Image (cartoon, rainbow, N blue to C red; front, side, top):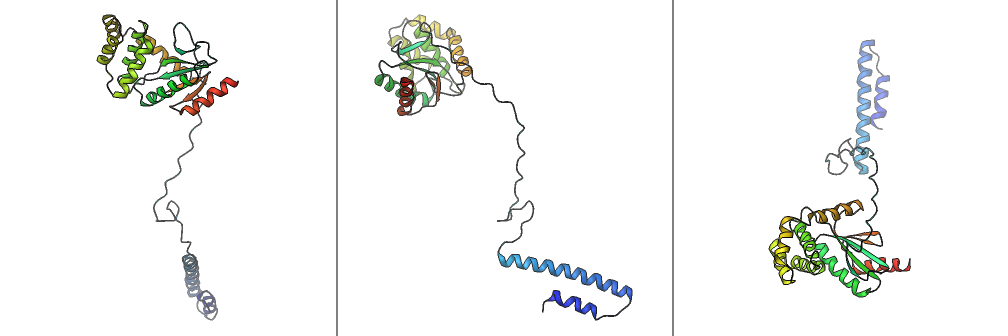
Length: 255
C-alpha cells in the first residue's frame, strides 16, 4: 500500500481536541501535497523527460535567449528608376552599334570581381560579334582607393580617342596589382597620347564629374555593387559565369 493511501486512514482513527485536529489536518494536507509532488518528480525522472524551467534550456541547463521583438514595419524602398538610355555620342561602346542585345556594365576598375567579369565579357564579344554590344560605365566604390583616379584616367584617354585602350591598360594593372596615377601616366605615353594634356586632365580632376554622373545614374537604376550588368535593361548582379550571360543573351535574342 502506498504512502498516499496510508495517511487518510491514520487521520480517521484519531480522536483529539479541535485545535489538535486542525494542526493535524494541516500537517496531513501539506504532507500529501509534498508527497504528490515527489511522486510526479520521480515519474518524470524515470521517463527521462526531466523538468523544464522557464527561461532555462531543457538540454544543458543554459539560459534561453528571449526572442527578439518583431521589427516595426517600414515602407518599402522606392523602386529603381529607369536605366539611362545608351547615347552613341557620349557612351563608350564596344561591338556592333546596331546589335540586338546591349550589355550596359557598371564597373569598378579596382574590383577583383570586375576583373574576372572583364574576361567573361571579352569572351561574349567574341562569341556574339554581330548580336551584342558592350557599354562601359563607371561605378567606383569608395573603399577602393585607386578606382576613382583609374576611372578618370580612362576618361582622360577617351578625350584623345583611346578610352578602350586605357580601359585595357587599367585592368592589366589591376591584375598585376600596380594601380597608381603614375601607372596611368606611363600608360598614356605607351598609347601614344599627348602626355602633358593627359597629365593635366588627370591631375585637375577634369573628368571626375563624368565618373560621378555614371555612379549616380547606376545607383538610380538599382546597381548596388560591382559588377552590375544590364542585358537589354535586365540587371544581372555580380561576376556570373559566361554560361549565365549567354542564357540571358539568348533569351533576349529570341524575345
